[in-house]
Every structure is written in structure tokens, then in C-alpha cells.
Image (cartoon, rainbow, N blue to C red; front, side, top):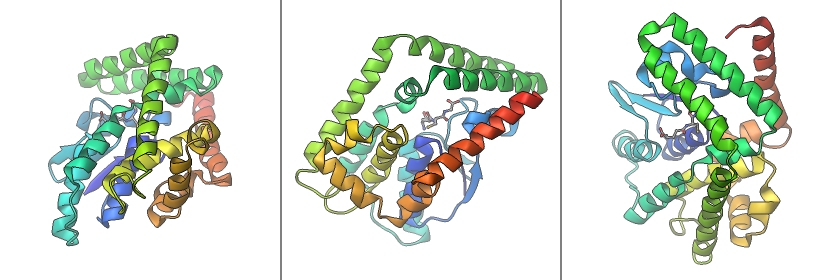
Length: 265
Ligand SMILES: N[C@@H](CCC(=O)N[C@@H](CS)C(=O)NCC(=O)O)C(=O)O
């Protein structure tokens, strides 16, 4: 089994937390979307949407995050005898959490100068890959269109406002649920938590902990609790806790600058 993912990708974090919590063995491939590695033809041919993560078991390939987690549960039952499957309530929570798309919210919190630099770099990568694999030209054109549309949408304050509103609604619903239970799906950790933890980690990464987490006492306690889990430390903390966050971000930023300088797309 192979997982194509990246520590920066929120949906990748969800699937990796599920794999680690369930104790399923897998081969990990890092595909850095900020460096446009998801546009490399070997990956792009398998997945012309170029989204992460991608889970592959033999010829079976899954792109949808919730479907991947449910599939991992079935594998865990067979390979490690872990027979705890998500209840209907947990699946509904996973889908609810999945409905919040972090893209516009995240990009709107990155300074224009940095965001536009990355966006321009990725467009150049797409054009370079297109020249190498003309048979994939129309799919690559789709990604170029998507990049321009993203920039257009970010200029529309309603798009960012709607994304923020749906995040606040999700956080409020979780806050209410945590009045009665320790975790989202009850008093045990479930896959709903594996899906929600990366949302909190993203808010912290963007420096928005006070605005969205600290002001919700149940979520603040929950966040303190889940950060103690070894799986959190392995999937997220290792890259983003304390000084590590600077190191992780600087590494990608330096690669980006060097490639731009050498025009290596
Ligand atoms: N798993 C979902 C969402 C995947 C997703 O949006 N992934 C983001 C990272 S969290 C991504 O790969 N973005 C890179 C791109 O769109 O080029 C899907 O396949 O629809």
C-alpha cells in the first residue's frame, strides 16, 4: 500500500492520522504541492486533479479522504485484527468536517507577496511539465485555469467570508458536542477526531489559535488532550510544533527561491 501525501496538506494529515491510529503499514511518498511536485507526470498521470492525498493498494486507487479512511478501517480489520469500524454518527461527522474546504481560508491568511510568488512558480512548473508530456496537455490546462480562478476568487471578499462562516459553524458544533463527550464521536478517540485535528493544527499554523481555539473552552481542552497522542506528534507535531514549524517552512521556502533563481521548474 502506498500513500502519496505531504505534511503541509491538511487532507493528507487526516489520512496519515487514520493509518497511524489503526496501525496499518504503508509506504510513504512525499509530494510537495508548494514545489509543484504534484504536477510531475508520474503522479499526475495517476491523478489528473493533482490533489493530495492519494491512497493506492495494488490497482485500487482512492482520492476521497473519507472513503480512504473507511477503506483503511477495512484493511486494519483484516491485517491487524482491529475491528472497530466507524459508526454512522462518526461517518456523518467526518463528512461534515470534510465539507469545510481550507483552501480559500488558508490562502487569505498568507501575505499576497508570498502567495503570488508561489502561485506564479506553480504555473511555470505546470507549463514545463506540459511541454514534457503533451498527451496530458488538456489536464494541465485545467490546473492552470484552476490557479487563475483561485486568484480571482480570493479577490472576492464573499468567498473568504463564506469559508470563515462555515469554519465558525463547524467549530461551534464541535464545541457543543464536547459539552457531553471527551472526543467528537463519544468518550473514545474515533476517525472523526483524526479528521478534525488537522483543522485545529491549521488554525494554529496560521497563528489563529486565540481567535478560534482558546475562546472555545471545550475545544481548547480537547486540543491540549489530542496533542499528547503519539500519532499527533508523528504526523503533525514533528513538523509544526514550536521551532520545527520555522524549520519546515524555511526548507520549502529556500527550495522554492533556489529553483526560481536557477529557473528549474
Ligand atoms: N481529498 C479531497 C481534497 C484534496 C485536496 O484538496 N488536497 C489539497 C491539499 S489538502 C491539494 O492537493 N491541493 C493541491 C492542488 O489542488 O493542486 C479530494 O480529492 O477532493
